[in-house]
Length: 100
Image (tube, rainbow, N blue to C red; front, side):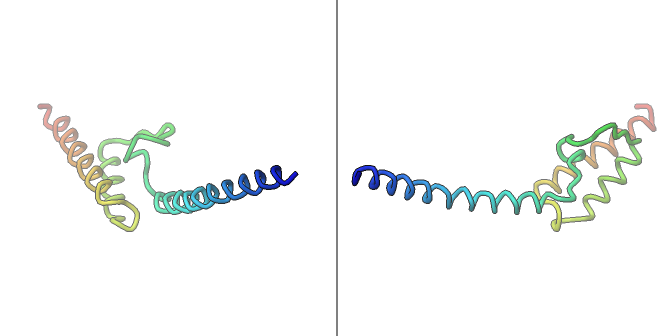
């Protein structure tokens, strides 16, 4: 009986030690989700686009709007990616416009 109580105590201790990092990780995930809220994932990683079709001019305006939101919403890497997408979209529009 004493052996069983000892094993249960040991098991409970181990479970509590593993629960603390899991709870801390959940808090980190909540912060990440809160940070990403409001991001246009369709522009960033082509996710959640659902029948979203824009003209090149509309896409340029959407990207400019998202870049204007700045570091309050996006990380510096994400802003660089949006700027690259803006440059590519403008280049595509110019190609189509000039026929080159």
